[in-house]
Image 1 (cartoon, rainbow, N blue to C red):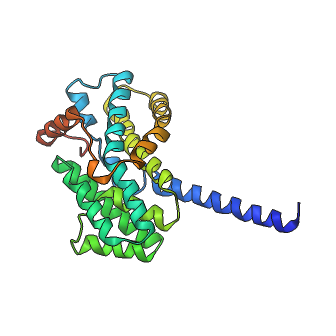
Image 2 (tube, rainbow, N blue to C red; image 1 turned 45 degrees about the vertical axis):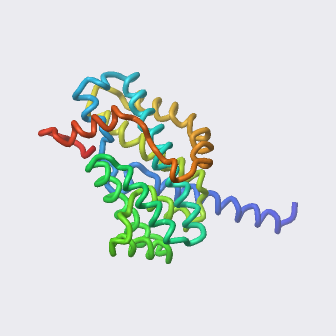
Length: 242
């Protein structure tokens, strides 16, 4: 093997390692955009006796990730494709579609608050022109600025794949729920890590389905989750946003 080929292989490896590190950075559940302060309805589920142990926590988290894969996950892929070609008008349309499907006030608040923070963080850290354009769209009210679109734009400008973007999005649904569970119920770190690992087995199949689904068919039918969200809004004492 020549020295030149070794150098090229080393360069490719470094690129892959850098991409992985950045995916981990921007996909971290503790990334400072406020995601850790939301429970996605788990607080109400625990209070109402819907989630009581490890098995019901697994079922609840699986439902949340499946709902996300049929909803925001489709938007993430569509937005990533639009961002790759710099189509800001399409990004705005996708953004509005995501916002329109948020049934509760807190779901909308969560998505736009995290989306705006993510866009601002991307501008500060990466400074890519498309991120500036998307942040300006949010600030001028051209789009609500939902989190799935901000995530897609951020990953697209870094040339991270739509498959990885989808995986990070789904991880970002599950991890905060399980983090909240540690503070809301009798469950251990061992239990939550096992759940997170088990849920990752579904990612490839979920991506394949979402990648073939049209944006107009984006939906997430999980009525109990919406009922719990409504209950949570009226609660007098809350540890988390919903």
